[in-house]
Amino acid sequence: MINKNLIKREIINFTKYFGIGLAVLGINAFLSWLLIDVFHIIALISSAFLAISIALIKYFGYRKVKLIKNKFKIFLIISITSLLLYIGLSSLFIDLMKFNTILTVTVLTAVLFLARYLAFHATEIIDN
Image (cartoon, rainbow, N blue to C red; front, side, top):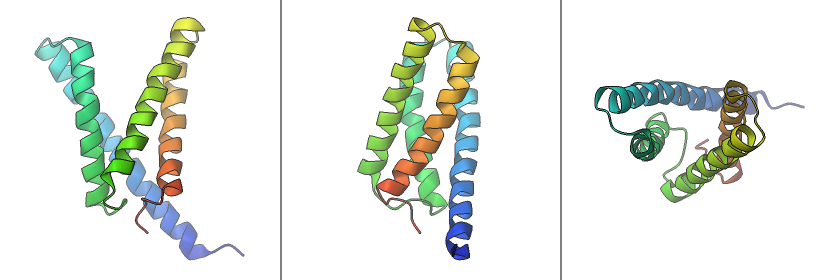
């Protein structure tokens, strides 16, 4: 038998995760535009700065909505691993294998988004 409370809790947790992710996506887009187009900081430096900033914003956002436990080290390992996978896989598929950029970025973003959520569960940092 399916535990309805478990399903309800999982829907609530994923909604929190999705909501923070969506908010951070908007923040990242705005800050990228601001740093690169307005302040003319090169993309390499802007992206490095934003990757760190966005990870911190996500962590404190997840903590604020009581999604994850106070386990920053585990969160950071998952986030860095995801970022490195994104960089490596996007380079592999786009640069080397010549896949369509928009399709590749969309699929990688979605897959790694779900993978991070599953990794949070596997490492038991989701605060139930």
